[in-house]
Length: 87
Image (tube, rainbow, N blue to C red; front, top):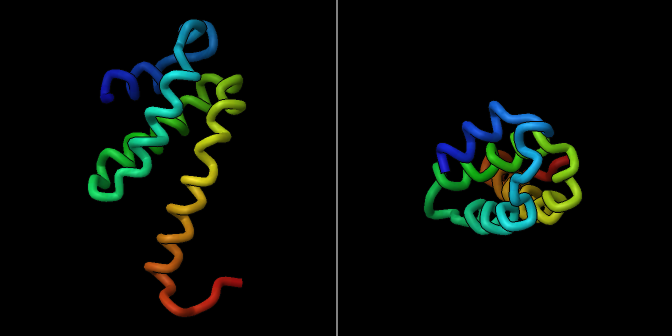
C-alpha cells in the first residue's frame, strides 16, 4: 500500500495514464471500512484523496466512496459532540 501511496503522491495524469482506477477504488473502499485498523482506514483515505488530486478523471469512480466518507464523518461527529445536535 505504501508504494501505491508514493506513486499517487508523485504521479500526475501523464505518468499514471494506465493506473487501474476501477480496480483500485473498490479495494480502497473496503479498506476504508476496516474500523478495527485505524492506520489502514487512514491510508485508504489518503490514497483516495491523492488519486483524485493526481487523476481528476478518477472522481467518477471515487464518488462510490462518498457514502463511506460521510459515515466516517458522522461517526466522528457523534464521538466528539455526543448527544448534542449539529446545526
